[in-house]
Length: 76
Image 1 (cartoon, rainbow, N blue to C red):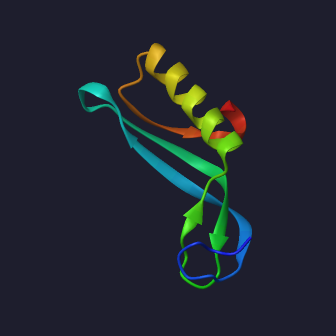
Image 2 (image 1 turned 90 degrees about the vertical axis):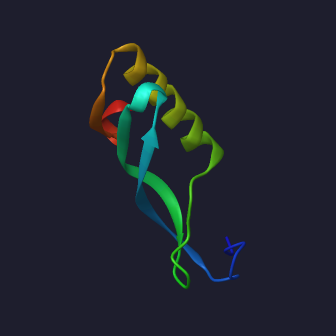
């Protein structure tokens, strides 16, 4: 896949996604699968992974976590 920003090549990798939730909650999802541009460094998460992250965040919010780190691979 070519990078939409710079047209460089993307490679498989992982990224870290920080989220500021309602009421000031902060959740950081670690090791999220992504495509990373080897030219500009831009990171892209596909829709299937994004949906899993959303489900993970919903679960974390229901559990009442105020601040924390969540490992994508363990929780998804």
